Figure 1 (cartoon, one colour):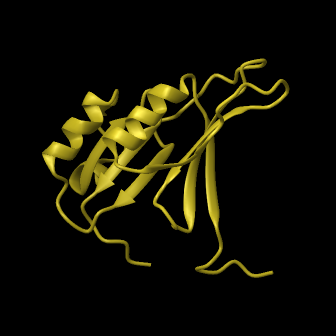
Figure 2 (tube, rainbow, N blue to C red):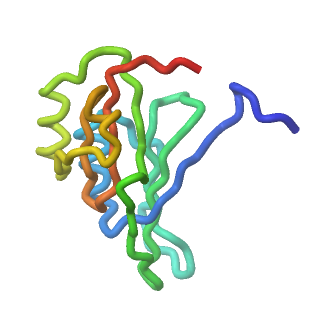
Length: 134
């Protein structure tokens, strides 16, 4: 099987607080909730899936209440969104109001071409003003 443009992608990472993550990625960034667990099921993770409706990707945040996994983000754990337009300060303010923290990028390239905001778990979201050229 070949990976191609129709291949679905899920990026998953742990979160301390799924409600805080939802505020950041939905209220702040503007993604939609695609699915969330609504009740506690012993032996299963709590899940929050966000992304664009009908997109070929989604972002999954997990929490195992029985054996919590502490998020351990590094300065290079990036979720980059290519906007193809200047980053609007209003967007950055929404992310900060939704629990994010504006931070300097570890790689100066991202400061030249965008804005970096740490999510409530410390993972970094980069709003890049460049267009994706792949």
